[in-house]
Amino acid sequence: MSESAVANHAGSSKDDLQTAVVVGGASGIGAAVSAKLASRGINVLIADVQEEQGRKYAEELKNKYQVDVAFQKTDVSNEQDVETMIKVVVEKWGRLDYAANVAGISHAESQTETGVTTALVDRYVRLPKPVKLMSRVLSLNPSLL
Ligand SMILES: NC(=O)c1ccc[n+]([C@@H]2O[C@H](COP(=O)([O-])OP(=O)(O)OC[C@H]3O[C@@H](n4cnc5c(N)ncnc54)[C@H](O)[C@@H]3O)[C@@H](O)[C@H]2O)c1
Image (cartoon, rainbow, N blue to C red; front, side, top):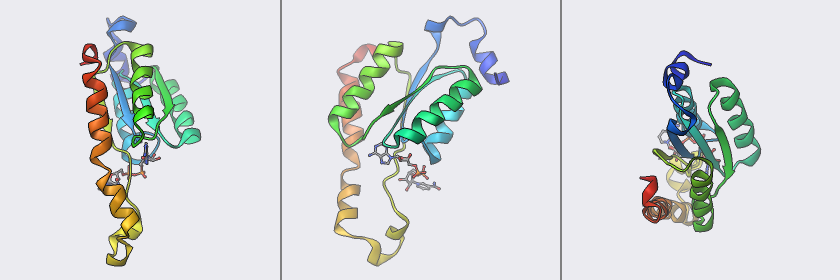
């Protein structure tokens, strides 16, 4: 267990541990955020569309930092998936202290003018939807906030 995780666990019962959900946590920025939270003794639910990588990474962080790290397959643009994601957090830990939405939606080809396609713009326009969905689902579960 890392020193920071030990410090965080010291004197805490299992119920005292803070929890986080990281959307897009299977790779990139989300993976780094998940690792940082776990290293501080915070339970993490990694929610991502990449199931195999997400499960493997959750197991890796769980073993490394001795906190509860779980994976839930989630497409953050899908309302049902977001509701299920929050339900999993509630059932597992009964609280939610942090939520990071860092799902990657861009592609390298969008960096050139000709790479900006209608389909790509549609994906960007959908970006606020997951944020609204998460806010709405959380507002329906005020005990989590
Ligand atoms: N990495 C950088 O330096 C950088 C800089 C500026 C902005 N960004 C932006 O930040 C975001 C994340 O970047 P990254 O480098 O971590 O990307 P990444 O591709 O490494 O990771 C993104 C993660 O989001 C997941 N994801 C994609 N769509 C999803 C969905 N609908 N639901 C749930 N999960 C989904 C992917 O499976 C992946 O695990 C991107 O939008 C990127 O454009 C990144």
